[in-house]
Length: 167
Image (cartoon, rainbow, N blue to C red; front, side):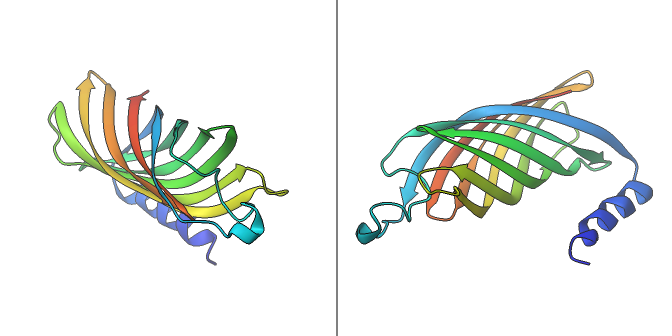
């Protein structure tokens, strides 16, 4: 039941509202903000990511539906690179434009699952949450987006910048 509820919700939204399919490609840096201290007795193996301040990179693709009032609902997949650690994210994405004008602000939230292939034998998985604010400019049917937000999961927090293009 828990797995089928989001699918039914998307199906219902698809039938009720006028919508348009949308595909977004995004890239941007990650700036490390905070990390909880690991257990020294564990030799750092309890850490989700390597210690210390650093930057990373994220490449993402999101697909879904855009509804009448500027609400986007969809799913996204991302590749993350932080120091020498690779990771992936799967998320439910929402984005809401504040105006229908060619230039507008937007608010976004992603909630999902992340997996890093780190120093732990099986890697590390956890849920994550990201939210932020951005600026959108529409050119004909295409959109250019620039956003900034906070990404939080397990022991780490990052400031993120997103540069995206809507196909």
